[in-house]
Image (cartoon, rainbow, N blue to C red; front, side, top):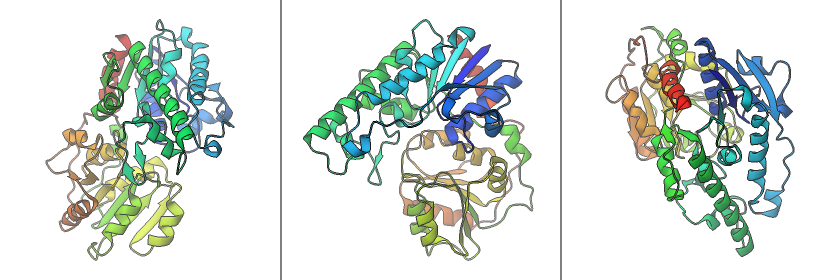
Length: 403
């Protein structure tokens, strides 16, 4: 097939989970003989962009998002026009190329983009987070999962004390956002990376027609992980690894605060990643038993994951489908996480009962971690295949393309 992937998260020198997902899928499809191009942001594009992201195909400049303006923060409300304008910009760019491809597959943050793509185009989008119904994509506010159903309440995510006018305008923006996303899902095919995401959208938009939607969990490139498997003497007893963007919702600060005084003498916490909260947390918690390594190349992250005693995913937000959890399970590592979002669905991919330890609260998460650290680390022989390897997911995706 001739496939055009589209994402505003690409290109870039450091890409997050969504961008890695697109590159992993695209490279795997290329290896299977398909013709795959990626369209991304023209304002980030340069001659070496494909090499920067590790893509072995052709990268096309499509649309620019630089200097978006709109002054939402200064005005204190979400603009009802802003996101539809950017969605149309993405749609126009991909429509310039769509006739040359069998399918266009969008991975991005503008769920209404499909509304501006004619129904005759074989268009698929993958929803990677709660951005289908939440303009901040997280459904997380004031250190808690956001449960509100009133679109006017969303104004508090752009202004600390919104007045009636700001609540009304923001409510109009979020209402239009959700309505147009529902239109896009009814018109074109949609992949949700967890059933949690599908159900979350239906809670926010009960009238939505998701008959054309399918749940396909995230995936990893298992052969690469298997190459980094740890030998019997390679695992470091007491080594605790946390990987991810250090920002609100990921729970790194909450975990570090809770784990103080609980770690056995041989234990050490290593945090890999960067983000807006790194400097503050590093200043407060860094020391002989807690180290911050910043961003690391993916191969190095996998090597460290394979050699740690346990991985911790302390996200207090509702993760859609944590790739870090999937990587831990594929590597045979015990993983401790909060039982939120789509994470409980991933227990289906354990090698053994209890490999994924789910906790309802942070204190209980730490208790489970301490229990794991009290036992000698085990090295699990890795099987030849893993059900959430990208090459296992591709037949499902191709089948969806052909529907």
